[in-house]
Amino acid sequence: GAALVFAAGFANSSVIHDAAHDTRHSTGFPCH
Image (cartoon, rainbow, N blue to C red; front, side, top):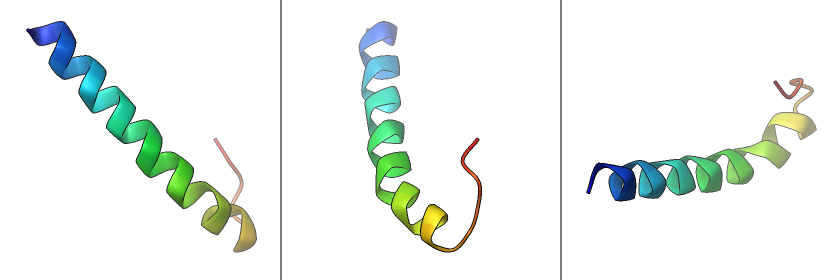
């Protein structure tokens, strides 16, 4: 149960990060 919730949250965070990634780079923000 907890592992499934964690996996779902991690995947969701990755999607959000990928979506913002190009925008961050295009505005000059460094990654990590």
